[in-house]
Every structure is written in C-alpha cells, then in structure tokens.
Length: 208
Picture 1 (cartoon, rainbow, N blue to C red):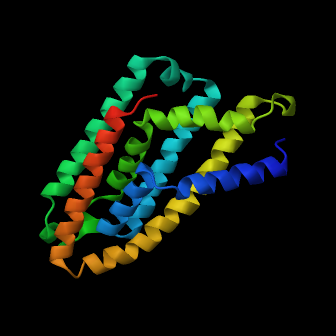
Picture 2: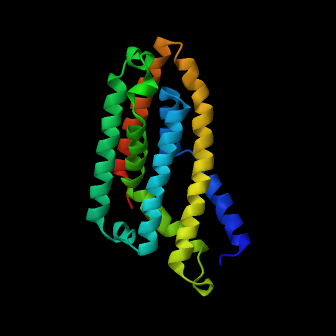
Picture 3: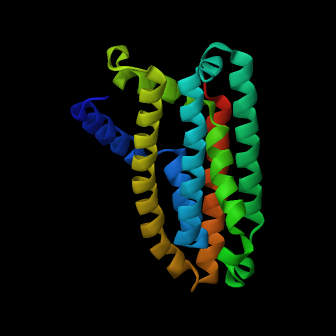
C-alpha cells in the first residue's frame, strides 16, 4: 500500500499541475464560457475519461511506445492538431444567433463529453507526462506496480475533476453574461477559435 504521506504529496502535486495554465483547463474555460457551466463539466468528465485511457496505457506499458517511436508520437499529435483546427473552424463560423437560440441545447451532451475525450487522448504529451510522473511515486517494494499506477492515476483524475470542475463553474458566470450580449458572444467565439488554433499549432510543433 502506498504510504499516506506519498499520497498526500502526489495529490498536492496533481492539484498544482491542474491549476497551471495549459491546453486542457483553457479548453474547459472556453467551452464553459461559451455554452454554460454544464458544458464545462461535461468536457471535464470527457478529459478525465481520457486520463483513464492514459492511466491504463502507463500501467500496461503501452505509453512507452509514444516515448520510443517518433512515428507513433507524430501520428497521434497530427490527429490531435487536426481536431483542434476543426474546433477552431466551428468556433469562427459560430454566430451569436446560434448561441441565443440555445447554445447548450445545440451541443448535445454526448458531443461535449466526446470532445473532452478526444482532446485528451490525442495529445501524446499527456501519455509521456504520465509515463514520467506516475512512476516517481511508485515503489516496487510496496507490491504490484500496476496496481500502484492505477491508484495514482485515479488520484490524479480526482484532482483534475476538482480543479477543472471549479474552472467550469466559475467560467459559467462569464457564460451567463455572454448570453445577454450578442457582440460579446461573437467576440468570445473568435477568442475560442483563436485559442483552439493556437493549441493546434502548439501541439503540431511539440516534440517528445
């Protein structure tokens, strides 16, 4: 069993990492501001589901492929960059009228949840981060490394839910203000599109 002191340090580090500005929490913020806090929460759940995939991959050793194979790394990051560009295109063409007529309703819950999953699992740097981060808190003398990795991954997901859920909640206040201003809706869509395009570029040029 992992010592409680190690768990406390790991959880604190996970919270700090979640608070640090990055693609995922910016993604949650923009979606929650545009479509309401429920949308942000659903995207957060999607991102956390993606973390389940990364946790399993690290536990089973699959994530090592992205650290050792340039081809695998580049293929996955290209898919992720293209998806972000698609989101940027959707944001740029969105109008205030579309938001006014039911922003939250137009983006079905399943689509928002799926958006979070794809955003997370198509980022190979997350897999490599998990591969580098989780093992630092595992100890072979304490039993199965796989079980320890799964436990640490679960704790990281809890930390992510707390941090990103808070981001979604507070960004929802911005979303409520946006509903009353057509001009602000258009500006926020343009900002979101720019953010997505920037994240796509960042991912496309990233190295292992």
